[in-house]
Length: 414
Length: 194
Image (cartoon, rainbow over all chains, first blue to last red; front, side, top):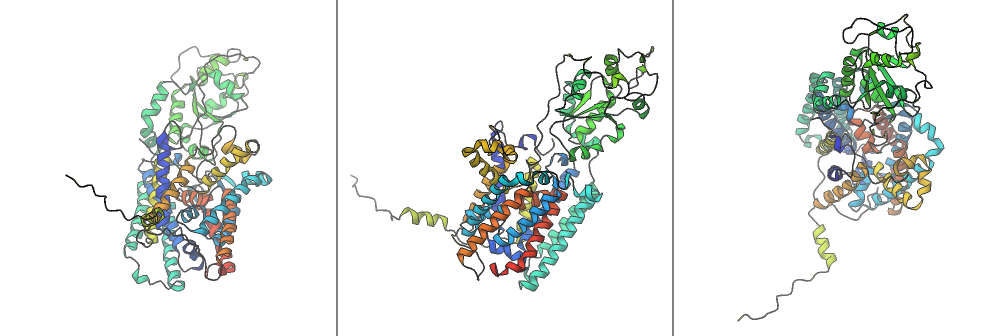
């Protein structure tokens, strides 16, 4: 079993207890904010006058604690990073919105989460802050159309992690973030001593042990490394092998053909055959990806998701395409299908009218082309993109079912 | 033979007094910030581990507002792309995990305040300003926060905390911007707090 649990990724009336789980998480969230002093605006504002850096300590303490636990779990294969909601990066709105929030923070003394906690514990300033926040949120909903294009596109980078940005492996990034946070804690304590007259000798000694433990855990993330694609698949194999055995994801050439012409779908065709075979013949619009490189496409496909995207993998027969399907499934890429019977099956159906195509007289080994080609025309054969008029009425039972994917604004504060 | 005597009358207190006695618990101090950070980190980890989502606040408030808008002006909601996504057609804007988290957070915050004797009607402010000024500033700051949070697609909880822990580049840029904006302005509004 891998986490996160699929039935808990959104609330659903089918699982009434999914509501309870989120309420319990929220309860713990609110309780911890309160006991940390986040219901008190003066404690929050003190952050910006260096007298008490509680905000920084709690926030970064929480981030690095959760981060090392998450990535240890990911490294051990218990948790699938591909299924965690990583806030989509829109640099423009995030920086401008962040600056506006910074101003709101120092003027109002709260942030939205803490103001709720302040309000329910009787702080009247928090009540006014919540009222203001409601007005601000309402105003954004009513004015977003004025700068819709900017808001939807400025600095859009998709699911863009610090690993993607720096090119460093997860463990190194995690360790660097922990080291940076610990340095900031040290700096914060020096500032508190200077500006807040805090006596550092009276601070608990245990914080040094905690810092050491966090650093050790971060180094452990480096040592554990990331699970390989094969290891990831092994964890989900029982479920996914059943799908393959039911032939729920193997689509016949006719369905792929209709999908090619379906403007409502964004079709990505991945051809995992050898380059020689690809150059001899391939479907128009197909991308050549060697089988061993398919898994590496996972993060890229996750980075820019589209709810109407369908990915079809194909090889000469089905064996290699099935391997490619497993590799993408292990990376949690949704809506991946296999061309049933592969290119050979495609050609035996759509290649019938093609005079230059010759079925080889002798049997060929598995995953070899069963046809002889007069020339390496690539996708310039008629059967590379058969005519919609010629094959207008093809009947089959469609298998492509678009999985509802998480809305890009569905996670986080969405 | 049992004598029928009236039971001694219980000390009758008005219900408000009894409620106050229930609410008043011994005051306890806030926990150490590092311990708070550690506990908050555990909550955040549990949220990601079980559900794949982090925490959130402003998104939940947004959905409460859109729910109200949908009650009164459903046509307007259906014609505004930003609102449509949450409440278009027969979509229920309240059927979302972040709404549950926000509801839970309010109960949790209240419980924390009650258990530790910190429920108190008060206004926290700097010594140099009046209560009314503080309220006005809180409202203004809240409005900016609300607007900015929706623009950035997340607030301190849903973007900085959650996105920071799963290493989203945008979340870290956002965090720098929030602290940057606040520190840049802090000196000029020091009268509000110091």
